[in-house]
Image (cartoon, rainbow, N blue to C red; front, side, top):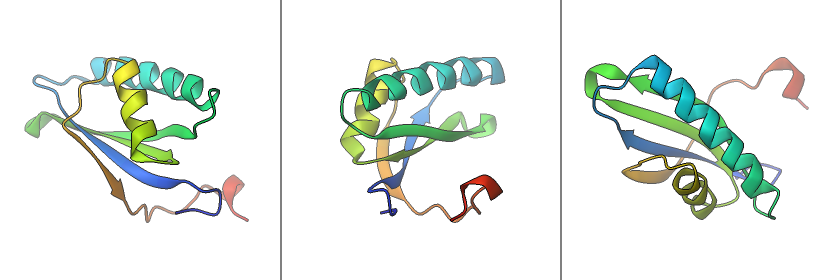
Length: 99
């Protein structure tokens, strides 16, 4: 859990024939939906995505207050997912976000 009361989560999505344009469109949808959910008192934001076309998998990366918030964001954006798991994000923070 971060100092802001959020944790990192991954939504694993099995998407047959995944393409870059589809990923970009879906990422935009879920980012907009996550912002709307955050406006309703939850905390969820999409921080990135990783597509693995060879395996037909997309990983959506979130910071959220709970897995339930990630589930709501995916469902409301009509994003099919197989599971949502808490994760450990070891990527360095961008220079502007460091304390």
